[in-house]
Image 1 (cartoon, rainbow, N blue to C red):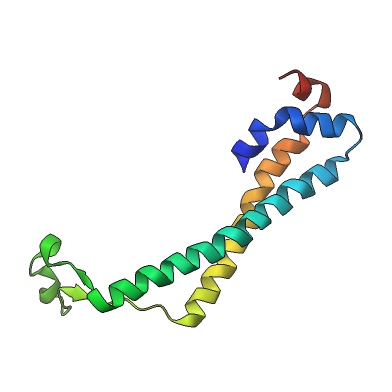
Image 2: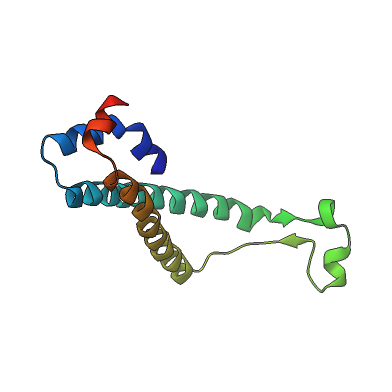
Length: 121
């Protein structure tokens, strides 16, 4: 999001020059981040479920990397992952909170722009 704000410096400067308030610019960046998260999170969850479905049948073979070290600690050389449903919901919530916090700095950078200087860049 910081790159998006820095790449659109002229656009944000123009919006501020024609009367868009700093609060609305801040809200625009935050809402854009949350909308990107709403698209990316389901796509990531779907990809994780597809990968987990494959690996839960085939397994992950660590014997190539670790040899017999896994057996020394009481684990099998092949691990079969599983994803509990309540953990997925927790991950989705964490992603949204991190996205919200990550959007604050780019939005703050957009607030600090001076319209005339931003348009000249």
